Every structure is written in structure tokens, then in C-alpha cells.
Length: 541
Figure: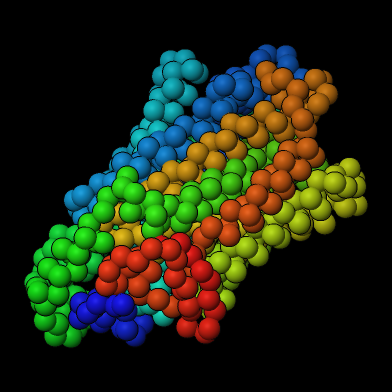
């Protein structure tokens, strides 16, 4: 039985789409633009770092990062992100969303600049400094996940909440696209200004000293969007749900939202007291009550995000290796350093433009129509299908006449990742947990996702190596090959389908209805959650 709902929360739930919604999307979304740029731009420059710092005179192939170094450069930011998601997620519930929001952004700005200023007298010193700053860059990025999702969910109305949260996350696509475009511009500018022969023609002159500026410029540009957003983040008021339901300050919540919504709202302190003092609204994260009400929900959000990110980040970080394997990117020896960065950036830009960005915005368009559950299930299903379609006849795709078709099929896996679980795993944890635990539970879910990204970043690096020892990258042991790696990713996506069955549908309901914060009593068992258009799914409560 529903209790009386706070007027300020009802006003937010029923508010028409207004200017402040779009302002919040841009302010929160620019953080994700920066996040994606910073996390994925490293895939543009890892081969360049190998050429510059690990060149072996007289070798038949350009220098490449040793396995442990490559794993560190690719994975250290994810380790920081995982830690940041847990820490800032918890802190967002303890101190408030707004107080923590600025910290994460400043950390991103400082560490983006620091990454580009990584200097030392030895190659390993440069890489160690770069990894240090990228860890703390990831720590700041990690905080943005639970805070941005929670803030957007608590500001949004219930009719279009999914689209608003997904729109924040969709800025990630533009960040990946921007990384590719910046790589194209910087590499082509340097190639035009400083002429260098291909590595096969001249092993020494192929890598010019000026190449050291290319990766630094690409990395440091990530600080710009974060710095431009900082002032506006600090101007945002605390969310009404945190102020009222966690801080228990009804007067401040009403005052803040009166300004945002441009309406007069009363404080209703007695309603806040009744809601927050209800025993069913005071259980903690490690309580039996939480396990009974939300245990399966948390298992569903953590496992699906973990499985999704193994596949998603493997594809993104190592698409250059896949494109090289099928011959879409020429061999490193046939290019100079600037041309190699350009070809890798071109591939990333085309994939982002044709599949990644459209996939995100398809989710924005349809998430409040067909629901989170259906989109996530569909996304995992088609990712599984396309992975197997790429892997089983893999030799067919490596033949020159079929390479464009391979890229098209590969693009579809990105499209259905983003018009699928990559967006919904971000949206749902921000909706289905109580306000006092929302940021923490989102942080836990996201951290499990980054654990998957670490598995993808470290595991695929070794797994995708050729089974032929003569064809592996320098310093790497033989792996299982790209074909078998793609089969593994297909199996992982299939398990994502199964664990999606644990995730409830949250379309069309207020946050308090979903979490039970406005329900009278504490009934055993389960209740049926019914969407606006008659869709119902039985979920544990």
C-alpha cells in the first residue's frame, strides 16, 4: 500500500520536459564525453609509444610495447576507475551528490594534463609516470559513473527518465568519436609538416623525434571539456531526493526545486519524517532486508555489466589489432609513425560514426517505449549472433574481397552493444535502489563492469595473439588467435542474456515506487511490477 508521496518528488516525477533537463544532460554528459575520450584515446597511441620508446635497431618490425608494459598502459586506468566507482559511489551517499561531483572533474583535468607531461630519462620512467597519472585519471572517471547516473535519475521525470539517463551516457559515443577525430587531425598535421619514410624503407628515420609530441597532444586535449564544465557543475543544486530522503531537510529540498521548476513548493517536513523513519526505509547495504528486497537485483546489475564490459572493452581497445589481422590497416612496417596513428584513428572514427554513436541514440529514442529489459536482452542476443557470425567463418572474412563485409559485421556488434546492454547497464542501477544506497549500488555495479573491462584489456591482449609463434607481436607468447577470442566473447555475451533475467523493468514508475520507499509495511515474497502499457514482470522485493 502506497504512503503519501512528497510534493516536491511528485512535482519532479510529473514535470514536463524543461530547459533544466537539457542543462543537466549536458553538464553530466560532458563528464562522460571526457571519460570516453580519456579511456579510449590510449588505443590510438599504444603502437606509437612502442615505436618511440621500444625500438630495436635493425629489427624487421617497428618497436612495440612489451606485454607487461602494454597491459599496464591499457589496464591501469580501468583499475583506477574501479576504485573510483566504489569510493565516490559510497561518498555520494554519505556527503551528497553535489559535494563530490566537482572533485571527480578536477581530478580528470589535472591527470589528463599530467599524463601528457610524463617525462623521464628512460622509456620505463616515461611509461611509469604515464601509468601513475592514468590510474588517478581513472579514479576521477570512476566517480563520474555513479554520480552522473544518480543525479540525472533524481532530476528526471518518470516518463522520460530512461532517455535522460541514457542521453548522459550517450555522450560517451561522442567522446570516442572526438578521440578519433583528434587523432586524425594531429597525425595528419605532423605527417604533412615532418616527412618520414615508411619503416621498411628506413628503420631509423621512420620514427622522428617530433612523434613524441603527437601522443602527448592527443592525451592532454581530454582536459578541455572537463575544465569547461566545472563551473556549471558547481552551480547545480543538490538533488531533492538526497536532500529530503537522505539528509532529511525538506525545507531545503523544496527551496532548491522551487527555483529549478519555477513553481512554489511547500516543505512537508512531517511527510519527510514519516517516510525516513519507516523501518523499511532504514535498512543498510549488508542487511538481510536489503538481500531480500534487492539482492537479486544487485546480482543482475553487477553480472550483466561485468560480462558486457569484457566484450565491449576488448572490442574497443583492440579493434586496431583486429583490423590489422584482416588487413584493413596495413602492416606497421609499411607506414611511418604518423601514418599508423592516422590509419588507427580512421578505423576508430568510422566505427564510432557508423555504429557506436547511432547505437547510443537508438537507446535514447526507444528506452522509454520498449523498456530497459527488452533492449538489454535484444542487445546481448544480437551481440552473441554477430560474434559467432564473425568467428566461425573467420578465414572467410580475412580474404581481401570480404574485408569490408567484416568491418560492417563488426560494426553491428558495436551498434547492438550500445543499442543494448552498454546503455541499459548504466541506466537501471540508478533507478532500482533506495536513495540512501543508490550511488553506492550504482558504484558497485559499475565497478564490476570495470572488473570485466580489466579482464578484457589484459586477457584479450594475450588471447588474440596468433597461435603461430612467428606471427605474434614482439615479446608475446602464442595465444588462441583472433578467431577463438571472438568465439569466447560470443559465449560471454550469451551468459549476459541469462543474467539479464534477474534485472527488473523500471520503465514508467517513480523511483520511490521502484525501491519501495513510499510503500506501507514490509510484505514477504514478491510483487508484480507493471509498466504503463500493461507490461508486467514479477521481481523479488
